Amino acid sequence: MLGSGCRCLGTRLGCLPGRLWALVQTGHRSLTSCIDRKDRLPGAGGQVFARGRGLTAPFSHPGVSSPFRPVTPYPAPRSGPSTPAQLPVPVSHHQVLLQPVTPSRVLLRPVIPARVPLRPVNASPASMGLNEEQKEFQKVAFDFAAQEMAPNMAEWDQKELFPVDVMRKAAQLGFGGVYVRTDVGGSGLSRLDTSVIFEALATGCTSTTAYISIHNMCAWMIDSFGNEEQRHRFCPPLCTMEKFASYCLTEPGSGSDAASLLTSAKRQGDHYILNGSKAFISGAGESDIYVVMCRTGGPGPKGISCIVVEKGTAGLSFGKKEKKVGWNSQPTRAVIFEDCAVPVANRIGGEGQGFLIAMKGLNGGRINIASCSLGAAHASVILTRDHLNVRKQFGEPLASSQYLQFKLADMATRLVASRLMIRNAAVALQDDRKDAVALCSMAKLFATDECFAICNQALQMHGGYGYLKDYAVQQYMRDSRVHQILEERCSELSR
Image (cartoon, rainbow, N blue to C red):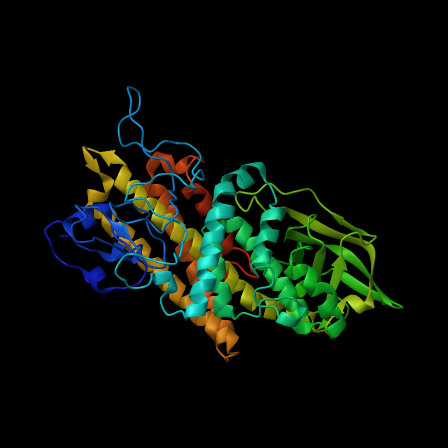
């Protein structure tokens, strides 16, 4: 249908930017224009010129200096006696910075120049509906993701490295306490701002961004429910990421049924004595601050309190580092308390308020994790489009297959729908609307399922190459899979 010149619904959509390279040549658009917007200049001789504020392609043209710094998802194809022409070279997919590119290759970050010598076009979809300030946050996050995270993403995954230095660089941009109040060093941004930032960062490394989101949730809980002394003692080093935080709710016997947790905290004078263990704790062993939900009273949610336990406290220890399918840039261990004495002054809120604090934190946590899924899906769609343009079968690019065009259109549709649900929920949470909790759960359920499906389909469309660790798409798939499970309850129980 597209090849015959028919217009489809995608020509009237202004969501995500872009279109398949094959369609650019014919001048026709499809729903895949939800991926990245590109336009010709008169007299450009078929060259594609990228502009706008979103995920765009670097270029060159006589008489026009490019305002973009080149980045490509993988190097140019090679050809030779043993390698068919147009076959993607299976080398590290994150050797991306400052490499020459063809017009069909896509930048995984926006770079906003001081002067753009091109006529204006609509803003990219990821920034549609955002105000100018939010667009600036997004630009900074995309740029940081491309420069500091994407080149190292594969190494962090394969060597299971916890990138402390890079996260501290992120904190210098305000990402250590995105929605923490400014008087204790936070950025004081909204939930929508936070979602935009985490989506952009996750295009660089989904696993690392997910940990940053958990760290932010812990800092927010202390900022929102702690007293002034606690806020000024704990939050400043968390916002700079001089210290890192972990959230301790899940136990071996209580996952989705969090109110049945057994870790006890018995008061003795001016200390609580903690006994029990927490399971699947992100950052455990590396983090400095542990926000622990424990039982100070009777059974049920009203018997739970929130206590901050600092690394180095006597009686605090950790289990072995877990071997995981994804999320390998952050360590996961059990946190063990054996007669661990913690000052009463470290209790956040009153006794019995812990479950409320935990659930309040998780409302935002669901939005954060869903936003990380958005970033993984966004990057996967871009990589898939590029692969279809480069990979040839039966003498022509896979991009010429109408079936694959439709598949990519479906992926773009799911991505945009997920983004809209997440941002709607973020605004509801910020405004403290009555339907905020339900909307956060719905957005997390829908977006994590759909975004994983996008990443999985992207791998499938890469064929055998998608199954190689030299290609980023498999890591986005692995890192986003766990998002359907965590944040208090898995997708099945959320329903």
